[in-house]
Length: 413
Image (cartoon, rainbow, N blue to C red; front, side, top):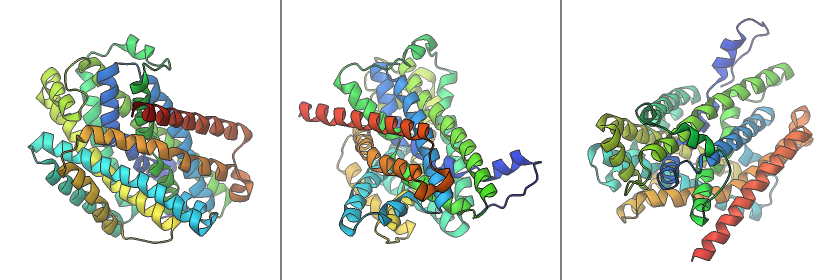
């Protein structure tokens, strides 16, 4: 749906507000159950040590999501479509396979997180909880299919609000050591396990499927404006959309780590979500524990829906096959339920899924930055030199962290 803009200067704030939404949908990827597992584990094991990872990852996310949204608005095409148009058949299919593996890891994390939440709230078996989360996600996707993207955005925004309350509430009753938290802004590690956790946190924050998705969300909402003035206004509004959405997501992620560092450090079993929930309920009261679990459930439901949207975007763009969102959600539900039924530790499965996501980031980020730097693709909106340099540094840091992760993982085998 394209939102019409007037040329009158009055009411600019209202016009910008009407254009907000796509970045908040993409931001769900940054507060999904994988984030919960990674952040709680980091805080409970290492205190405030990895605060800097969340801050850095969120800064990278703002940069990358703005680039993705800009690409969709200027070109009227999604990132997977533009990548697919530039690859031969074999390369395109190979690229799709790795992108689908990333999307599958995302789907698994989201369903597992929602299943854990239902287990905490109602004592449901994990496999049954996974099926319920999948069914609820199908219902949310039906809103998008029948009512359009704007209605879908409203539902997701409501769930995002629940997530924010669920994970920020604990800070009001938990004594955070703000001096130590500030010390955590200094980049450092404490052995190989912290590198693994940092990669997991990075993968949980700068998620590849969200990079692919945001270009499609912006295109579907705004179209490709013909008028230069219209396009420039959309790009300005998009910057506001991205900054607001990612600030909220970053605050939620930081709150998770601070809560774990202040209330769960040294408490046995708090490196799992269920153990952390039990400790939170014991230390801060059952009301805070219930609010935490409700936030986790909202996170699983929202991210399961958005993940399916992203997977469909990847498939249609790279191999030009359109599978109904509801069918895709049903198919990708199977591996998550099997993992839950097999008795695999759900928190550890979440963390490993985020590491896989981290390995997939360069495959999405590098093509995105090359496309947004191209005058052939972007015209007058191609990246300036300083943006290209910043993008190169960001991509380089991500690749180095992933190489370190692979080396450490192999060495530990």
